[in-house]
Length: 337
Image 1 (cartoon, rainbow, N blue to C red):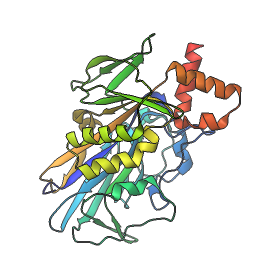
Image 2 (cartoon, rainbow, N blue to C red):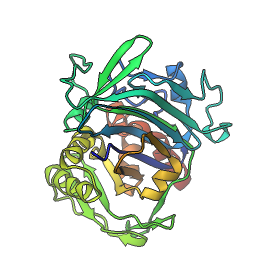
Image 3 (tube, rainbow, N blue to C red):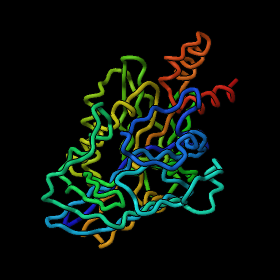
Image 4 (cartoon, one colour):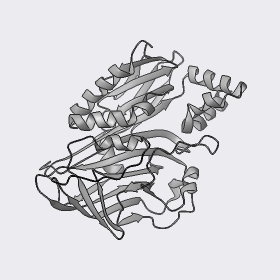
């Protein structure tokens, strides 16, 4: 950009839980092996928080080669994975307390030696097997070169991921009529949201528009994922993303956002993002656009019945569809019964 950078992605929840999955049903590793992570990979399975930040990427645009640095902090959180190699990730070493709310300081990541190289052909690392990580490269952003102690690394973006015990910008509660009462918890409204549901091959969604304190009817299961992807891309373009960025974002996560169950997919307010995930780019870009999509799981009666049936029949394949969300679903079942 003469405007140099864009930053987006997703992944928020409610009470503290295990965002990376139960030990028996851990979240699948969906990152290439060249991505770096905190020193003790097993430690991540014990992290308890409210927010799982899934795959933000920083895109840069420049008509000429320019050197920049970038720093991202994560309130009450840890940066757990990243690429290319970062000059500094805090806290350093292995964190022994898995309760993120007890962290003595916010997590952060800093890249100090990034060269934006618009004329670079780009030899980006890859692996033989397909991976959702690569879809984010399908944009017109400028390639990057990062100098590290092990040599130069090249990529189309700066990538990071993390978990936090921070609060959410939204709340949602089901009524006895299975309608969803949604409230914005900040001064900003939720500019757009989609209530989605999938039961086997049947899917449905309802576009809500702007939300402050609204009641949303459940969707009719007569829709299609393809039409929903088109609707969501238009919403993201309306938020300031380039069209290829919006398409890359939906392609990256459509298999996860639109899986079995019910969830509210929403645009996270910009003020909330700037507070919980402050970003500094030096030199300052001519334009900065940040776009995040939130995912809030809804434990409906249909989900409870499906999980209870799977447990009764020892159907691990069915339970595994709910992955890292199985723990909060089971908590809801216990509270109800």
